[in-house]
Length: 98
Image (cartoon, rainbow, N blue to C red; front, side, top):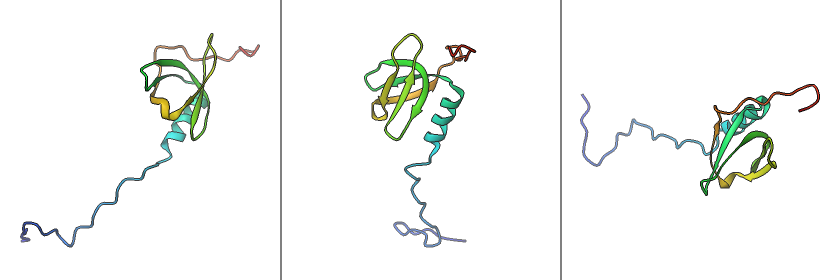
């Protein structure tokens, strides 16, 4: 039976390593959203919500393509969150490119 002494840590226990800062999951998620042209809503730090689909992304920004409105380049440091927009219709490509 092991006894615990106050203030003394167990020498047999290894300290947990901190979680990694980057997991590359962000890039994989943005890539899947862009490839599927999934409608998303992007909430900005100022509270504004913009809707569209992610056409392009890189380390610092995303390009949000919108129907009937100008496309936006949004810096990631201005984004509070990105969520799939269940209320919007999926963008459908037609033979005439629309």
